Image (cartoon, rainbow, N blue to C red; front, side, top):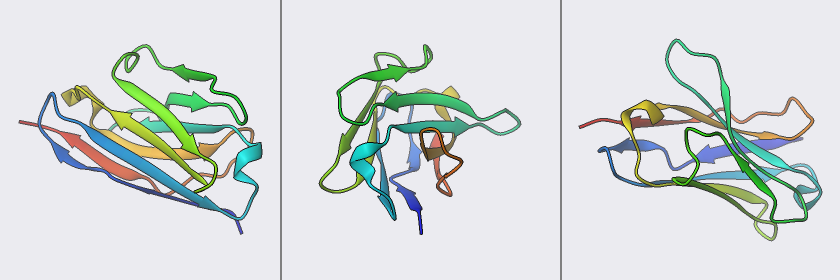
Length: 114
């Protein structure tokens, strides 16, 4: 069955960095685009970044552009989110998702606080 498992979250001070990973299984990873979403307390889930399947095309929300980088390793069936210069407003649970499906991971929590 399809599985997506996020990891790499934690507590970090403003200006710090984290690298999130989403390890997948149960489907042909190299054939699909992948998303990172996040949901802050009391807020709706929002798209953060997208990476296409076989090209380096990426997309970012304006709020993270220039600070976050999405990448993928098709050999490891894994999508990454490198987050630099983190801000308190980046505090959220981060989820990965397969494009054009309703398959989500369970999320990993990121807290940015002094």
